[in-house]
Length: 337
Ligand code: GYE
Image 1 (cartoon, rainbow, N blue to C red):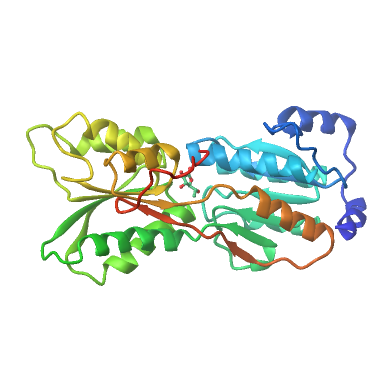
Image 2 (cartoon, helix red, strand yellow):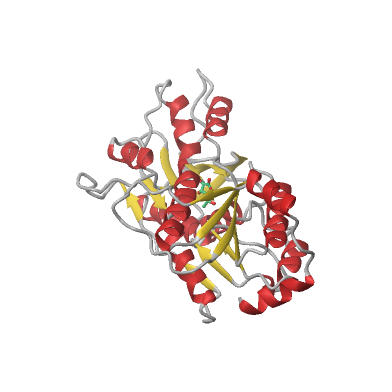
């Protein structure tokens, strides 16, 4: 990273006014932790510029908090920018981080494509980029230093594996409604692909409808309203929803009908936020595939390794669980999101 500082002389000098404008737009986070007894370990001056997508779900809020808390405990300054669900805002934030000459850029790509130019700019400025949670599509893998997050294809496979196990002995056909996450995101693409990969081996299962729910609870509700018309038969046997928010929105509507969730309609969800685990315990969901939002510590560890000039792994996938109706979750610890 010292090299980068030397290269920095090539860049235009930041004027004081730019610095103030920058600080106005980005929150400097030092004190977000709840546990005030633990003293942070301030041993260097690393600055991370972090571009987050927004706050569309409980998962996302926990992901942001995990980054803030881990940075605080590691004694790292985190410049946090909330993109309010817009790729263009993320690109602007990344450009500001380059001008500010942060030590590392960390970002969650809302969609897979369209990052090459801005990442090339970061590369030319000598700033390493760590991509977290969602992946990008690029022909030039040198544009980022590391990826840390879940294997979303495996999550889709796990959702499908649950169905194969549940219906192991039955000889009938199943109609599936899929509610997808944000269009163009690697998560939606991965969960869809993994799910299909496993189910295509079994002719009993057909995905009869697939809707974009944008990871929003409100969209889950709207989709349920479209399909669950009174005096009509339930058009599906299974719901596969790409996140708990959309599942819970769907349940809000389903519970006003005579259809029994997790019995008349088998429900498989992803994320494992507390509300979904509670619904699983209450017999309203059949399976919840975990997606772990707590990426803060592995990210800070990687940043420290980079600052010490060490080589870091290119791809780190976080191990994850699957929670089902067959598990005893009575003593299960709180999820924290
Ligand atoms: O499943 C969802 C969200 O990118 C894995 O984004 C993440 C997804 C998560 O907001 O709830």
